[in-house]
Length: 194
Image (cartoon, rainbow, N blue to C red; front, side, top):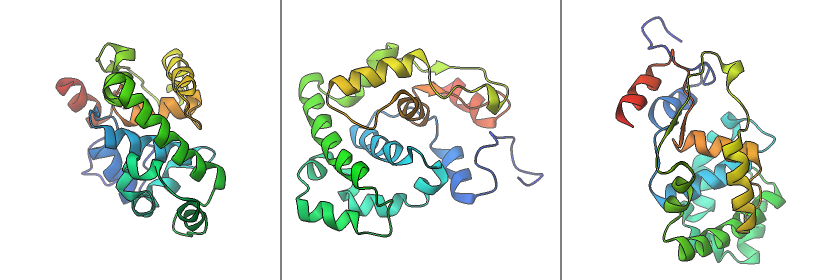
């Protein structure tokens, strides 16, 4: 961090892509179903890996998974799945790639029954952002009762790779939970807006 940089959460380090993601996207409330699907895909691939690894492959994932269009992903053929598994530009985890197709199918079914994924997910907080007040990265939890509940609900809807830790990362990324540290410039910006 340069001396003239605003104070921010420490997890982006000095990686410019991570800093841009932190400053512009992370924690901003999402209300677009395609963006929700993108975060579901990316957070599933993060399981066991660093977010930095996933973020640096985001554009490749975007291409392989048709711009994160759940309708197209849900119809991926065995040939398309095999091509994805062989693609060195993404994380070539067979289980996660197959889970992405299954999750797209579950996502579409959920949209049919709930109107939108957005309506479904925000119902867990009554449409409100949870504003935490963490002072250090060490105090930010990896999972919460809310993420346990969301994880269980998504599993019941047929999703996979949606354990509680992955769901908490999803809720943080998509702004259902504001987990920027109170010393971070984004905490105040997001708290004042939402």
